[in-house]
Length: 279
Image (cartoon, rainbow, N blue to C red; front, side, top):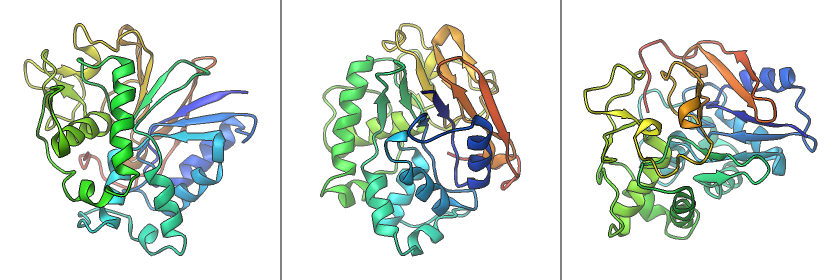
């Protein structure tokens, strides 16, 4: 059995199929750990959802910000310019797919490989154990009967720093923003959402979340996506691996063999112009 971690697919089903062929992936024998953002921007979000769901226990995905956006739109939020979600919303199996998506976690600690799988990142104040507890707390809301209330108030950049005393929607929003949107923060762990470029382009005083000194999750190997401009996959000193290599932006879809450390990529047609990178 081989375990592969794969970065953001974002509706690029052709690239996913090509990568799985390249890996000689066999469901039941091999496993996939997916960094989320299965949908949006690319042309085939419906095919990707159906494919990943059909893999059952052979594929584990965490939720990304685009996955949450799809769920929010399904609960009444407005679509945005550039969204490619309508085919999912009009599908005959829409409810089955969306119910399945709502049950996916925000973080997954993989017992077989020891890695922590998230879409975006962790603030420096959280230990790995605490992150998993908070992910489960938010997932209960996303997958439960109060989901509509959460999705109505999910969007926003505040609060921007962790405080155990946070409660209600502010607590949930902070947790979800960390797991699905985080890139940069300052040394105190305050999140800054606007900078999205590669390390070295950010304002003074900010750093990638995985490079903050004293980060409490530094003892855990972390697999993440979300950051297509990151510029490299491996960040050895941080035990972090960023697998979003910009498939939907004309880059490639990347898999990391967690048994050997080997990187395998599949080229992707350019569905969006350079410079249009968004959350």
